[in-house]
Length: 257
Image (cartoon, one colour):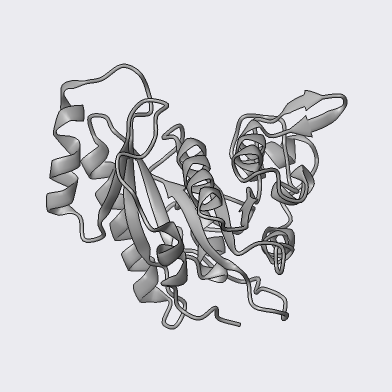
């Protein structure tokens, strides 16, 4: 645990179990909550499926789930599963689900449960041999808690997947996006041999209402970002340009451990 004067640092204390290599993949994170990660991840899944790729989708932990027939259901996991052509089962897509709309470890404690850090990794490993590309959607932003001792960055590091950062196209997005990219770069520098690399950014209109910055944010991000601005997405729309998602997934360092 970190004290009030310490900066939170990813720990990567749980390693993937040995076995066949993980499928190629991308880790979809965001500049925060409610930025449209699931919508963008679903668009990526649909694009890959249309290219003839076997797509797996994985939501390691989800909170804010609803009860249906006595079972907790994650709407995000359901959207991802449907976009990928319903591969395998919803249980494989999202094995850890919690009801309260809070960070997963907090929601879990309210149910006298805990997020299982080993299952976070094992759930991804379960897709070995079941897909060509695995899309992993984190919970919240890169440094949002995923378990008692994990941040989303921890899991991304252990999986070795490049990051696709989803940013909400609104006033403040330049600061939010640069902070996320810089955070990834700092973490990367602290983990020799365990890369955390941003493949690019997707700028998403997360709400129908637009402020004046919406028309200028894309150009400002292109000018200021190191990683590329991959595409823009209109409110509940599609990607404004073709992206070779398979190539981005292939361009990753060897998995460690």
